[in-house]
Image 1 (cartoon, chains in turn green, cyan):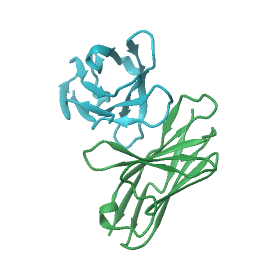
Image 2: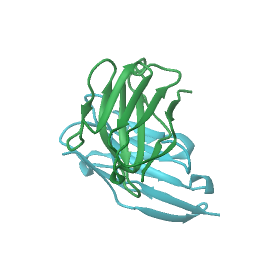
Image 3: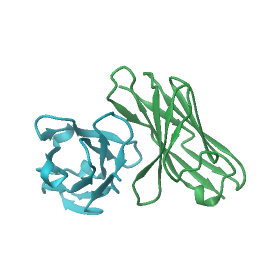
Length: 116
Length: 114
């Protein structure tokens, strides 16, 4: 079945550095991908909608200059956390919408980011 | 603003017990409703979804949910749980105008004891 892969699954970085998380749809094309953030014991919060070939749409309160999203191809979206701080430590999950069926969304396994 | 409320944050049951997880949403228009499950160490998986039609929706693994429009509710049920149902369950809503961004509830952790 359809699979969405995130990489890396876990990453530790130093404060002030940037880290990139990839989200790939492995066997389908995704014109739209979504990035969520999940704090411990809390729900998933939508950060942004990533559209292939165009700028991402950010939710209110999400800093677009800090969380850079690039959706350069139909199978890859990347989230770059720039100048990371410890409060950016979180679980980041992407999902991808199958462009062919139009109404099926698949989730990645998530990426744990720890900023030290 | 859209929001989803899950009433139970943590539920503990014995095998064969019946399960009902509450979910209420607030949204001014027509919505699509979903229940997702996240097993330990795994990614989110769709259990079931409601777009239109019969408000009683059957999903995988014996789960079902009933959409009650007047109550803005979409409760998840299973008549007899198994140990393998131990997971976190998320209710989510999206505007019916597009299968786009999902608004999630806080999740309910279910622990089923043998």
